[in-house]
Length: 233
Image (tube, rainbow, N blue to C red):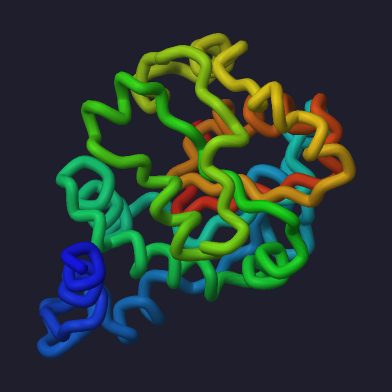
């Protein structure tokens, strides 16, 4: 009962827009979404912005990631970086619905969700989960596809340093061996179409490492969905 009331209070009741302070409004008003969430051409496998007509960045051409596709709703910049910080670090879990809706209405995201067999949130280590209180990727996945979300299939096997504080090469080493598939359910992945969900993609090291583990288990197609993508390093 309390959880349902909390959901209504944080997602349905009118409030000020967090960006322009318009009143009454949802957490981010339609005018601000139109202004700050315009779709841009992106690399089809790492979601970095690209010029029109270019499907894939040079890095992904040279070193193809385990992702078949990757979609991001917005750049990790104003105002979205502040909104995500409220959600991720200040226990404002009500932002999950707004951010998931932003992602759902991005090009190609809805078909990816409809066509997949399962939606997997990027897992947190027990240490990070205790520190944060909830897995922000799991809350997003539940908003995007509650009946397809499987939270216990992809596991985090060890605690790692926060990725944003590391250089690209360090990020790749940091997540090496950090993910695994639940052994008793590994066979169920063979031939499956999967969607991996996270809030922010920085270098892509974590998503790529998780996707590689799922690919080794036999997944047929893997799509990454992230709310925000940082610029290239």
